[in-house]
Image 1 (cartoon, rainbow, N blue to C red):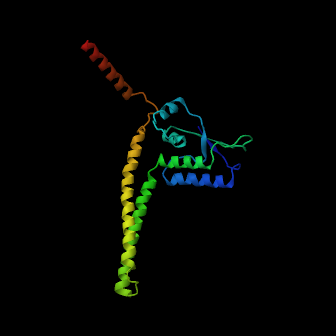
Image 2: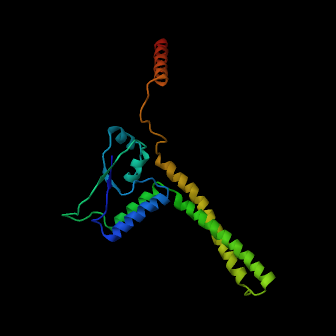
Image 3: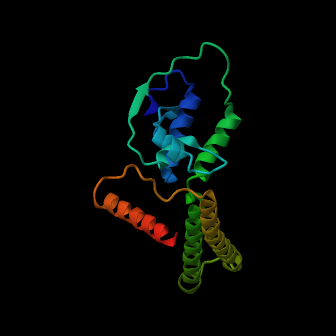
Length: 212
């Protein structure tokens, strides 16, 4: 069960707007997260054991819990105003947590760099076509600007595309080093699979006896 805040009336306007914008940003980055889900949750022993299979150092539990794939329920609650003490999460730590949530589960920022480089390259190509049209048809261009501006835009676009391609490989390396489980088994159903497994165990036992 996931504890989800029903409303944010006790938050400041800045924190309320920032939190809503952050969850929408996670959705844009293709990160699966429950909107307004805090670190209040009730997990079964099976879910806890599955969570232990994620051998990561930088833990973003709000994202890891969603990766388990088990059936989950949402419980809405209303958080009252703090009556004592101060928050242990100032703005700096909140920004660090937000960055951790994106970089731990998404390589979309690297892909957006590639898309941006491609858009800049296309824009520089169209600008070159417009410059040629201005010279050949309209005869009203400023001499020297096209040979200076267009190559700069084109080179910048190509560089961003190259960095985006390298970023794809770096992102795959990052995901591989996390060693996350490919799948989690929720339950074993009785039937042929169980009988086959029992038959294999019996055959291995008989083979061991013959070896003795």
